[in-house]
Length: 393
Image 1: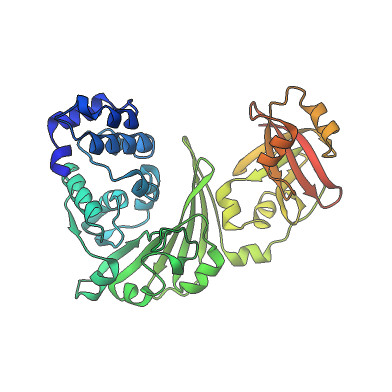
Image 2: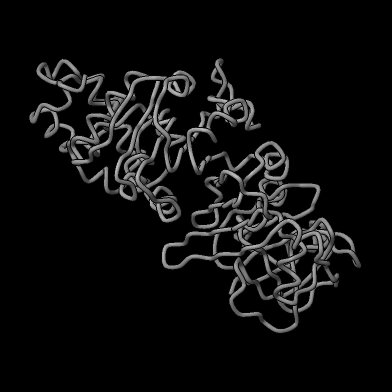
């Protein structure tokens, strides 16, 4: 497949048909007898999927992409570059090479990089792409478990991005269910590497995972444009201090960071109040990291309810890492009162600690997203369930 897709005529054909429907191309395969249309259609489908996710790779016509399914778990260029900021040294071992995106960007911080991947097709594609990108990464077709059994050298950093699907291709959520199982391999990993960097799903429970991975010096919850993409665990051999939790939100023009320890969160307390003039919603990385009391304490904000992670103040607080709203009106959440606020039924909806989710509320009230105004349905400690009509600042 690689030799066919590396043919200059095939590369040119792909570039000329990037806007074409891959399914339509396959149906018209007879029109292109010299082109491996099925393989080309798969490349076009993959390129459509990664045009914004991997812009550097997309811009290189000689890169050959794995199937769309294999690109789902692959890091974006933005998050791969972000990871590379925190590790460096002489030697890196990527035990779950996959599409090779993380290997490629991490390798730029190391003298020697070893990529290990059990799937031969992915291994072959990664080796081709690394050569195309003029990167000297040693590629090995082997499983993580088998490779670790060999008398390999020791590494400054070992990186794992385990599959979040089991042998039956069903999604799993606990780190001990991932493939390979980092918990089972934990001791041997620490014998082979000074530092472990493990990437996990945004769905992972951080507190319970930390119990299973002693020596974790830092956890990074990484969001891109307010959507959590990955959780990174940094494990250092011999570390016994407090784990630093970093909540990162990578925006187009800036980055938001909120850093704390679980002990900081336990010691902090929330003060509660009914809605005042402004409403604050922490970004998704802070919410996932669990800094529910500390964020209010740090910015001197009142919380609306123990289980409603929204905050309020009379005066606007600058530099808050999240969304800020100005309240225009507050009503009881009955249909008559709510529809008075939005006669054209075009508004954004947020649901916090409320019986119905945002999509259900939009359906019930026959509303569509749009504009800079919001209806926030939530529960307050003093006045119960409410609907706040707000404008985003």
